[in-house]
Length: 128
Image 1 (cartoon, one colour):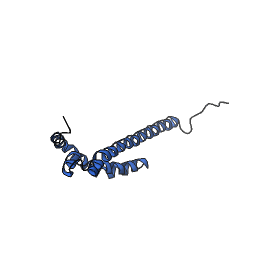
Image 2 (cartoon, rainbow, N blue to C red):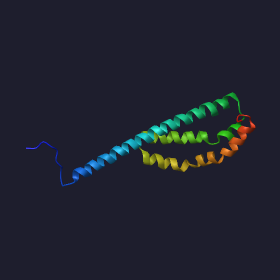
Image 3 (cartoon, rainbow, N blue to C red):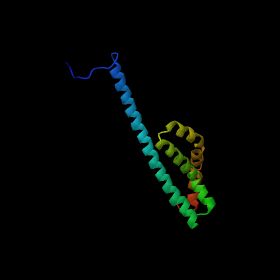
Image 4 (cartoon, one colour):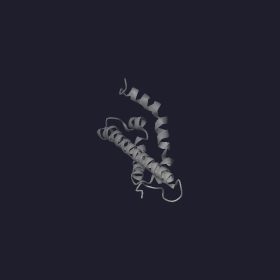
């Protein structure tokens, strides 16, 4: 009598089950990494939004037009990523990205504005 594990079912089914287990572990690690990365990104966006947008606004340090020229769509980007993060944390990756994709134009706006933001910063003496 042998106590070593033996394949259940047809020959090779054990290797299929093992492969499925490996894929599931990889999916789980990838999902965890995506959630952790998005959490960190949202924290960083929160810091930028709080310390560079809201505080400058509250203190009147920068005029609204200058603030908007520098930060353009950063507040919208933060909001969209917060919504994505909620979906990812719930494990609803497909729906999260489906809802996220229509808002990618905020990133396009931000990137398209980089040169203008640099010029505005240079003119306001915040960049050497």
